[in-house]
Length: 630
Ligand code: ADP
Ligand code: ZN
Image (cartoon, rainbow, N blue to C red; front, top):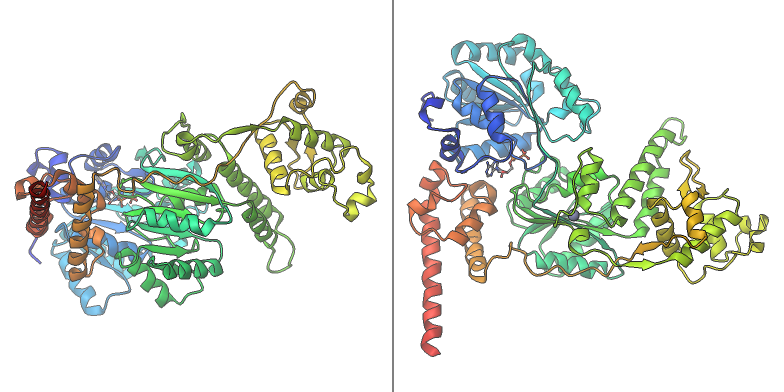
């Protein structure tokens, strides 16, 4: 390793010039520039950006422009290694210290640190707070200086977050010990409460706060009716998007195993991932996915934490998720690189029963009694997911609304905005349902009302003589699921109400009476059969650019395998697409591509431009041949 000459901000004309030099990007993403300027003023920071928003750059670039060492606290070894790998290919002096290293390597790295040869050190909180490590840091501070502490996944300090880690709490000790060193907190957490908690727990002082929108404009959201041929639909979805990487989430391990085996048998390279597999098998399957050896990973929600793969082109939920926040995070693993990607949710009313059953199993392990509070929260969350799935309004409006963000709607990139569902007039069935509720004296839940409508002969009906009601058996023409759909629609539209004390009883309101008196019509959105998405998996690229893109992808994979790194470490899909479109044939042209910094130009410029020239020549020859035979 060559000693690092101190790189100072004065070396560059502008922050953008530094960005291009180190990372190869021309412009900052929304918010990054202002955050970095605050960091250069030595302010504390709270940076909240959704997955893929570009948080890392907010501390990596300042680390390179400041003298001294930046410490990055990261909770997972896999994440540390991934980030360090990404920095190393850009020739940035970064390293990590964790339990995976032998003593000799650790000592060597510590010597490099004390000699000022490293700009960014990644470390887990447990190690950072060991007494011996803190004395080592004291030494670093006197010899080379500490420029900042960057706390990644900062929501781990909060009990209100979804991933509380007690050792994160102790990070405030750093603040006391190194009072002058700025502290940056970074997270993708969505809730205000956790944000406040982060500021408090880490004792941030008048931090510069940047909260980005949680909108992910490059993601296309769609909910599909899960039909009997769900597997055929899924297969087509995956095929259409080949060779793009994808994640398919299922509820159960059994389904994960079955689905991945079936896809394999049908010629799609897919591997399973769930908590029932051995650690070894899980790591192996994950690595093969990250390295593009397989196209698809079929997984339970055990998969995803610590996966940094930026070029996941689709995430399919083959079952209903448990809550909206979970759905947002899981679907959000698509398209971190900002390229268009698809998030598809297969919705079957059957899943509602399964999830309801799972909720009923939430018991206190000591007493075996039902956990009322947890069950109630889970039921409410499930209701919100169902609302989301059945809604006819812009999917983004609902998701962002859930996080307290107002979004005007009509995003142009979800199924409801692109293909509005046809509405059917169901006023008459609605009148039947509402009058049945009235006949039952507004004292029963939906299941009972449906039983009456469909003329069931069950005990409860007979005991209460509900088979004598005038509405008994008048609804045999509709299935249970259709009645449920109608009931949920009436509830969404406020045309009837339901008690919320844990014993849901249906009640009529003023609007219900308007329906019953023919003063108001009821329209129900009817899901159309899964719409085959138009064939444009590659962003509408022309045929020839698609061909070139595939060639460059193959070259990238070959180089990645030679260096034992994931392909995205070499270039992202976004960079490859630009190469395919702009077709740079010289190094000067190649340097203009976003993602090509100084180091990558030197290392890969020749091979990629040569591949582009070869491709264009072949195309030219082919075209000439066609012309000659015409
Ligand atoms: P986060 O940590 O917020 O999920 P990352 O820092 O991993 O996001 O960045 C996501 C992706 O966006 C990475 O592939 C990164 O290289 C890319 N990226 C970040 N900033 C920019 C930028 N200014 N221009 C282009 N790509 C960027
Ligand atoms: Zn929309």
